[in-house]
Length: 221
Image (cartoon, rainbow, N blue to C red; front, side, top):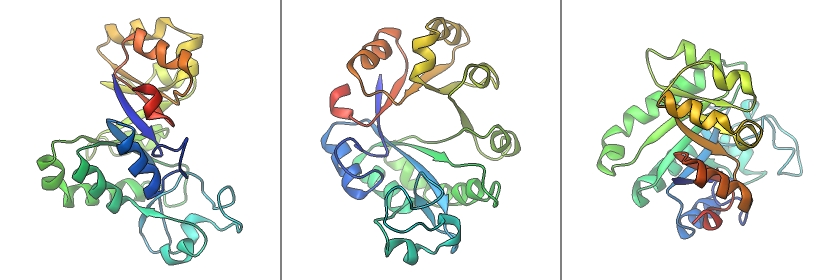
């Protein structure tokens, strides 16, 4: 069972900061997880929310702010730099694209170009970098260009869109434990988020899922 650090080791360092990902390395995570958005100057940044209101004193919209403007308010990590950190430390990486946004699938297209640019380095480090999303539209529109795996919080979306990997909310497995065997029969690898409590780590491990995404990689170990 692989252990991915959710926004880094965000249980003990500010989410998606360099400190959080360095902590994830210390904690023995197999990989990193991050969310990405585009700034007004077309930079791919590791950021979950559409605005800075939750983590900064001032509220600005990520898509309407430049990288420099955002960095005046809070620490902002470029995806490019996180990929370099993953390569240097041989850590897999899950990248979640956020939707809905006015720029539609521009984030996936920019992400595809970045990954193509770093393709040889990623291959040389023998790591996997995969894209995940809640957006069925993005998955459908880009399926011929780049593989994107579905993230699901609710039962119906989890059952739709057959694929070799699915990323499910741990509460779905708590509520519907038979889902695990259903997906095993379909040869679908399950990855569960956000797994933080002892009972959930035990449930994931005993169910034989492929991986968990957690704020506390050290607990998983």
